[in-house]
Image (cartoon, rainbow, N blue to C red; front, side, top):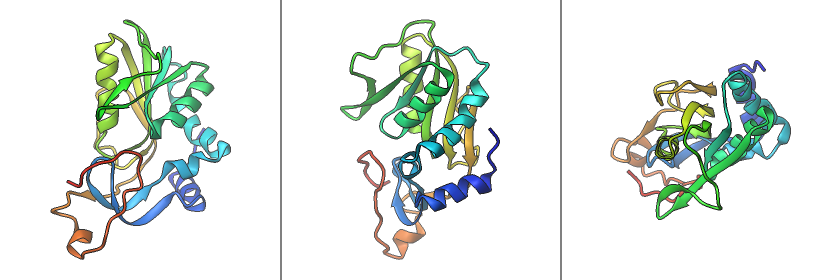
Length: 195
């Protein structure tokens, strides 16, 4: 499926998923732009379209299981797995670290695709990579919807994002919005401390 950046940004705008203001990101950094993928993924037709780009890219790769970090990546991983007809599992936080729970397991030699909704620094994806490596799996690749780093984050495996954007982020010390005393909001799923 071929979706232009303009079409994807229009989908985010139409669904109210492209937010502007002062945001504390899951990475702990601040930004004036926030991509709330959940607002897009509430519509199955958009979920199918956006995740279809990832599934199409990896359709000829050997994959047994799609694994995602909770919460943001769960719907992405599930839809990519559905389109590829593969198993879908997720890692979730326990004592501030991502781990496999609910009886989910990975086996040595299993081929996994890691999926996420939004990547800024890639922290959650790097945690899932470590889970997969410790289990002895073979990582086939990484797929995600929004690359806020505009291609700067490299996971060391084949990777694709549905859209790359250069959404600038700052530490709290560098943040111009903080310097203007504009209060920030934390719209993501994970509690973080400002950096």
